[in-house]
Length: 300
Ligand code: PBE
Image 1 (cartoon, rainbow, N blue to C red):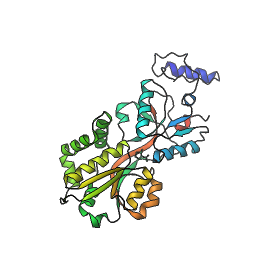
Image 2: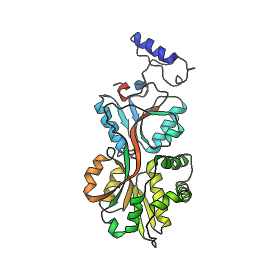
Image 3: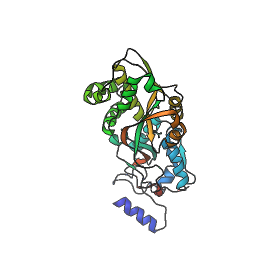
Image 4: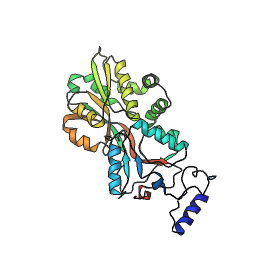
């Protein structure tokens, strides 16, 4: 490819010439545009999300372990990260974001995870359900639903994609539950209906957790529960279930992403196991970027 050859030529001449700036992602790009490396164009910045997220903390460890001096992981929100990613792609500019799957961004854009030879982000993960220690005794029916709830990455992505395209969260998740009666019947198998019992689910406003928490909300509502869903910071979400302030959450990413929070609280909550398999976190970039590995990022 033309731009690859240019890059090689530049390296051969000892120049810092990496022609993958805005506009150069396509082959008709103007090859005179820039001499800056992708890292410099990024201003040595990783576009992060909430500072309490596991993927944010892992990104900070990455900066350290790969010796990326001068790099910053910028705290933001999941929504702002997605907007920044969309903008960068519209302009064919480089961007590195703290990413995770399942996520609708992989359906919408052509993206790649940067390889992580040091394994800072860990391998595939599960998303587990955690409930307060007395839940089984207090609300055996809710406990049973939470224990039986499990779905696939495809299920979750379908729901997330609709919401990301502007559909209403409650309408979308309610409809998914109505349309997937067979799957839902497995979760409610052996469960008796209740009459307005109050239950509170904690979650964080990440696209994944918005989807799963609202699915469980609808299933519990259909069984007669009066459900409150409460958005919290990540650390507070864990704490609230461990102290019994909230009843449950379906947002525990393990073993890596929330490993520290699990260690801190595991004696004070009940782990009902995976509700989804095949989750993953890492640094994500548009496929048009030249770099493929975290090792390709350059210290300042
Ligand atoms: N996430 C989504 C969370 C877990 C769910 C990957 C942004 C985190 O990093 O903590």
